[in-house]
Each structure stands twice: as structure tokens, then as C-alpha cells.
Amino acid sequence: MTSENVIPLETAQEWAHAWVTSGISPVKAYLIPEADITQLMEEADVQDVRAYMGIDANGVSKMMLVGVDKNGKDLIDYSKGLYVYDFTMPCPNTCDVASPLYFER
Image (cartoon, rainbow, N blue to C red; front, side, top):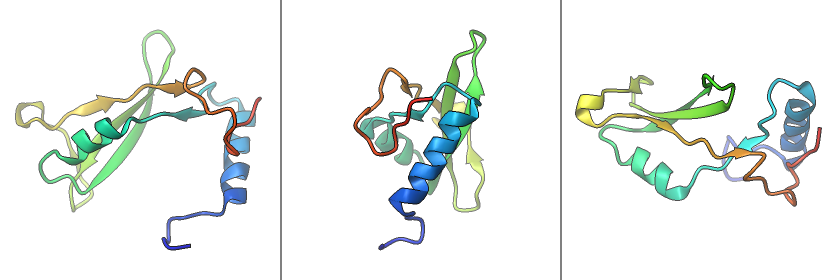
């Protein structure tokens, strides 16, 4: 493994299976298009990305992403073009059912 943040596939499968069987949310994963990640990373002073989970007024699960600066602070200032992004492309609907991380409930 080349990164300290890489985990074994077996661990990822255990975590994904635990999430799906927990019943916490029907969402199994989110598809985030490369163009969206690129746009977020090109915002001024962005070093990292933070994901927030939410539920809208209709009960739909949401994943929101924000840029984070070198001090670990969220960069949210709409007047400066620092936005909160809704990358809601949840699985189900965008699932890779052949993935080793995909589990049915």
C-alpha cells in the first residue's frame, strides 16, 4: 500500500456491509463527478474537502462538500465564490452493483 489512508478491501467491505445493514440510511454511496471535485479544489485556498451529511425537507439524504483551508477551517463565503456544494447522486440510482463494496440490505 502506498498511502497511510489506504485500507484493505476486506476492511472496506466490512464497513460498507455494516453501514447497509445498520438501517441508518437507504443511501449506500455517492457518485461525485470528477468535474465537481476539480471545481471545488480550484477554489481559493482549498487544501482539503469536508463532507457533511444532511436530509432535505422531503427526507432525501444529501451529501454536501466544502473546501477546507490549511488550518482545517471550512471555506464558506458566497461573496468570495466559496460555496457549499450539493453532490447528491446517491446510490441507489447511481450504484455499481458489480462493486465488491455493494451490498443489498
